Image 1: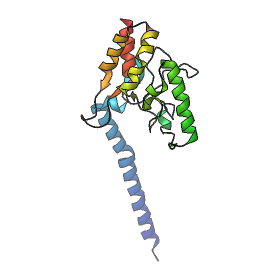
Image 2 (image 1 turned 90 degrees about the horizontal axis):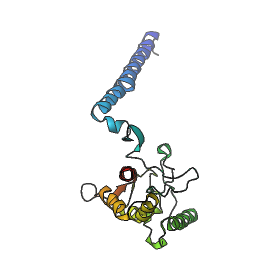
Image 3 (image 1 turned 180 degrees about the vertical axis):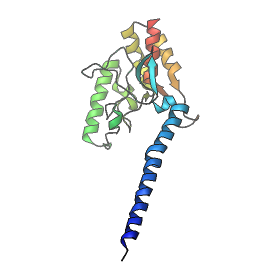
Image 4 (image 1 turned 90 degrees about the vertical axis):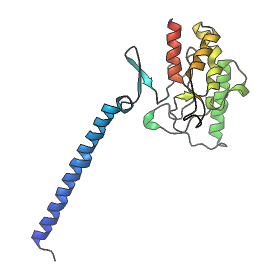
Length: 201
């Protein structure tokens, strides 16, 4: 049976270890990593925020909606792909519905009809990314096909030529990662910022 002195010594060792790890891992390490982030990667550490004329308009990493208060697409803006998380980073997720899920089929059917009416095109012309949410629900990019599909509507709403708006989309196309990974994409926020600047001129 251990003596009171040995018991006290064991407790004291445990308390010192807890204090050392609390200070080291709970205070010093987070401060060090935060300092490195703010010094070397300040933009990314702060959320890759995008500013226009000194005003934050979004993040280059998180998609956002370009709709009115009722959720209707604003015709003067390029639209993002659907989001199962309503573009909320705290609730990032997909729908987790399988391809034969009745709710998913109904959602796609509804989106297809809405986009067909908005863009004035046949439902079979609508690319898949315009109808399905990404796994995260936060993707800021759409396919070039979906961006080009929106050109006539955006040009008409802004009183701009389709050629001008088409050229803005072309200039906003990003190639595959490392030249071969994934597909070509268009960042919707970046494109809409370029669109607003061109319209202002």
